[in-house]
Image (cartoon, rainbow, N blue to C red; front, top):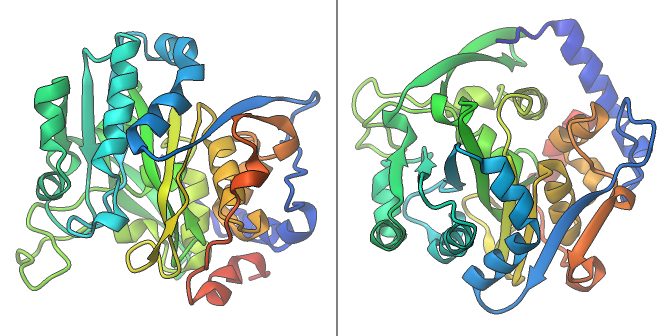
Length: 349
């Protein structure tokens, strides 16, 4: 458990205020405490088949992934923010590509697909998106994180500068879980873009059974996901950064076959992009994803904070991209209509 003070938050906010000048859009970032250049690998694939894209993007890491899994349970975490709008959520074909890869390295023995959907019953969303066909084919389990054990962590709220308790999925915090973020490439209404890290951090807070965003909500049912947002653009960026130390993927897969631009993550429009990004370094994967979306990395607060404190590699000069050429697949995603308001995190408090 971490308690955040006003002083520490103001310090990070001040760092965010100078991020635009010290972080080159091309990625000239030096991780704190790093003396020698560090190179990490990110695979970029393109094509016309989602499952094939995922499978091919994972293959170069076969030996590394097999060793990292060991005897641990594999947790595939899709990003199902809505249970009834396919464009907002992880496509079943992408999950199938991951499962085929796990089969190829003999790691299908203990795999679950686990989620806490934001707006309604998780398993209903799994049904809507065709996930149940994966159960019989690959013998995986579908898990509703809202019905599993949780742990209490604390997050920051910018309204009162106090820590607030939040229920977080034990499965995603468990050291026996090998977490695979199977995310979708989307713009966002609070943090500019949502990729592999945010999928894990905001997927971890659970909600009560019977909670929905509609009038059908069970009396008294609540969701802890809103607490993560910290009551503002500064709060959510800081919380994503701080929680990333405990909640992050061990393997990141970003499905950009059909991305979302504009008013994401719920109401955006499709982008025909036909790419997939994979890396065991989640920050490197998200950094490449941001570049592929044509977004200025300096504008993404939580990822800048993670880079500043050495939680991964965000310098493109230290990232070896395998497969496709990055420059051949950059598309300029239209940002959310409220983008100017989101960038308040860059200014001093």
